[in-house]
Image (cartoon, rainbow, N blue to C red; front, side, top):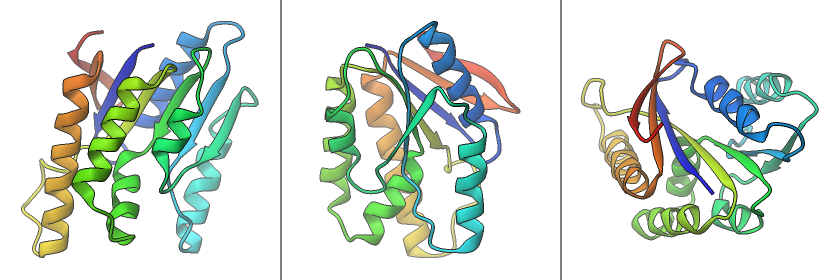
Length: 172
């Protein structure tokens, strides 16, 4: 089992890189799973989800886990190669559900570390921009940063994707 954290800005190529990395690890025959965390609350998001599905070939199975990512991870086996896309959407869903964010992030970190699959976690690095102008956005930025730190501590590998190129932060 290898736990890889993939960080980058919006449209940096994180998901494409993670999928390619997963396909490389799968070789011939290991199952590929995409765990998707998005909710389609509007037509634009539904279109985004549809485009992401089209980016994956028939080797990929999709599991929808917008809220209960821990349960989705616990159902995996050591044969699986899994990409979770993305943690910032999962975090947004947790906030919208009024979850205890600290407890949810700790449960996710624990489940990711215990997961028997080769796990590739994709997330947006949101802390490099301007300071958000409202309390909710600042809380989201701070919670995402804390989640990334927790996961980076337990990950075997961490990579930052910039312009589609990987910059290895840990392992690799």
